[in-house]
Length: 442
Image 1 (cartoon, rainbow, N blue to C red):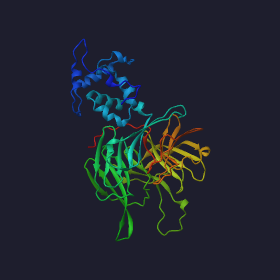
Image 2: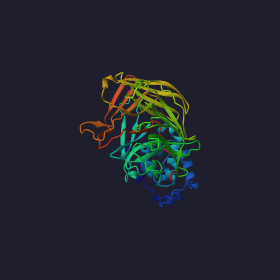
Image 3: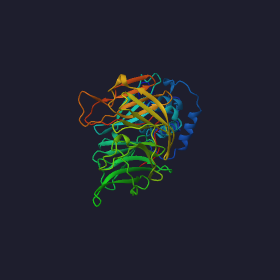
Image 4: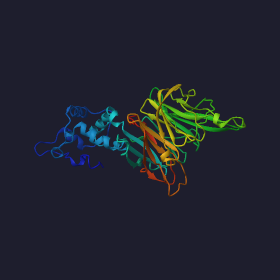
């Protein structure tokens, strides 16, 4: 149901006018039809006519036909206010709505840039979050939350994002599911072997835009009596798994979500201490980024970070649009400091950095227990940071999924996300330039 400020299409007469018979277009609307891949000539003609109209204020009392709605009103006053997860219902209304929503989304990336779409799990169910980042020092951050009914029949433990698609890991480890929030499509994926609790996943695509799922796990070698790092990949186009011949000493943490950028996934990695080697000082261990290239199906070389972190300090990755990677460094030994860095160049085997923001958190020490995810706004030189605390038995008096907006000399608190559930994870924030995907996955 549309917000009160919108023009509800149900209030507009779809029937015949008293002065003239119903048009061919109106008659078409009365007959429900399945949406095909190709738009009808009539739909294209109507859409073209709408695009020629100049912007004007809609007089609701005089509108008698659906086709009288101007394109700018449909897009700016209706589609822009709807959650991405609700656009599937809009598309299924009729062929014209399908065409208008598709074209408006593809041609209005700039208008959608400030709508931030995220997802969070609460009690193993998925909820969508929508944020509007305002210019007034972020004092008016608006948030809405909506339960995702399409995945209500299963329990979801983890969520990953790539280019408008989501990869969901089931709590019982029986299957994976890929979901397109815009098209409302799902693809259920069976394991090659059993999935495990400590599996690490990534979601990306190759140079041909073929989406793939990376799975990393530790397998115990009975003969050599040691753990082996195993890597396998699922191809959505061929519907098949295959094992990759990858030799690596990587220590990718179970809870470390990689950042998907230009089809590849970047991980934050810390060097492991060899078993039985007590001569290595923990603070001397190397930390770096590493990229998994979904085209070559290989890990790249170690990429340097602009700082050196210890095992107790938080390092979190995010994306800035479709071309930049961002990293947040939460210092442990310099109390109350958040460092934000953004790439000026990023490729599977090369990276350069520029400091974006340095925030003194001393006045709000202890508010964020651990950074879980974040987004940044380059135009306003500010960021929104989400609490990353995860607790299977949270206190009834403590809040989780808190957020903070920070900028140059500004720090604002926001506690409106939710109170503690029975199991919590930090929200997955897709990007500050999230766009829906038209990729067919079923």
